Amino acid sequence: MQTYTLEEIRRCFGSSTDFNEIFDAFQSAINQQVKDVEPYRLLFWNHALTADEVRLFGEKLAHEFPDLAYDVYLWLASIFEVTQGDNYELAVHYYQKAAPRPPRGARSVPRRLRLLRSRSQHSPLASLIEFVKHGVQHVKNPINLYKRLAYLYELAGDPEQGEYYRRLADEASTPGKDKIRGE
Image 1 (cartoon, rainbow, N blue to C red):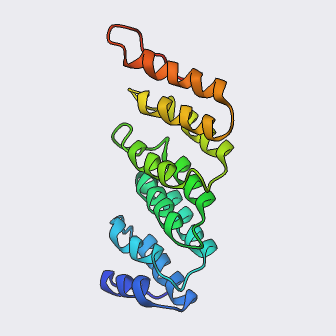
Image 2 (image 1 turned 180 degrees about the vertical axis):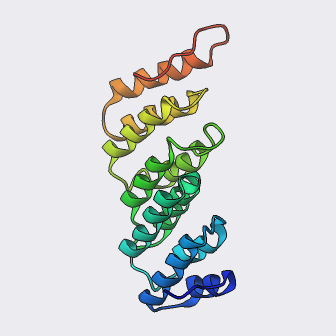
Image 3 (image 1 turned 30 degrees about the vertical axis):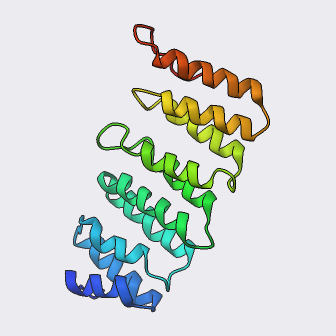
């Protein structure tokens, strides 16, 4: 197999339309232990690749370099949020995969909430609700997530659950009370 220089890898990831060449450059990067996320970002944004091909490369990269998995999954989520026919389900899927891997606490929560705020009327509410509920367990201060759950339950036509999460948000924001965490 051909060995590519880092500059050749970047060029190939950013502009090649030949899947075989891209695949060879990717394998070369993996074999050379290229752990800089920047070249791979070019790969993920390569418009010649299908959604399945982007996922293939992203999953392989996260598997080979687990310390990059969080960044890889966030990049994949952001890509699927705005491309590939606005594939919100894949965006949510990769935000979920990133959620348990944040390198510094709950850093991914604001990004995930931006997705939920901007896309909640278009995405399946049940999966969004489960996603936010899962996030409650991974943050120190779940007030904003409780508020988001209240809003999502109201959109779903379940005012009782909406009121339940609104009360949890109020209780969590009251100083001196024990913080309530998830169900």
